[in-house]
Amino acid sequence: MSWLILQALDAVLPGHKDCPGLAASKSAREVVAELRREAPIELRLVLNLATVMWLLTPIFTVYLPLPAVRLPSRFKHRHTERITTTSVYLVRQIALVLKQVAGLAWGQDPEVRKACGLAPYAADPGTWKGM
Image (cartoon, rainbow, N blue to C red; front, side, top):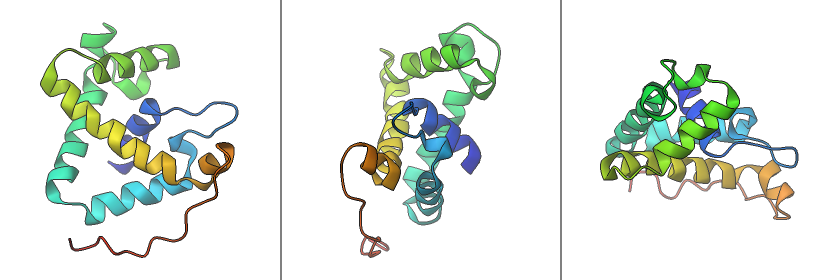
C-alpha cells in the first residue's frame, strides 16, 4: 500500500526538471512509512481511503476504465486535478488528505528544499509521538 500511496502523492505534487517528484524521493518514502506507523488511526484510514479513491475513480473523471497508476501522464494529471477540485464536498475533503500528506513529504525533502533555496530540516526529534 505504501507504493500506491506514493504514486497518489506523486500525482498530487509531481516533479519537474528542477525539482524531484515524491515517487523518486527517499524522504517521501520515510514520511509515508512514519505516518503509516505512528499517525492516528483516523489519518491512516482516510489516507488509505483517499488513495483507493484516487486509484479507482478515473472512469468518472477522465472516462477511462483504468486504475489511475496505469493512466498516461496527461490523463493522470487531469484525473488528479479533477478529483482534488471537484464540487462534491466529501470527495474533495477526502482528496485534501492527499494534498496534506504530499505537502508534508514534499516540504521535508532535502532536494526539494535545495531547489527552493532553503536549508534542509534538522533530524526529527520525535517530540510529537504519542500525542
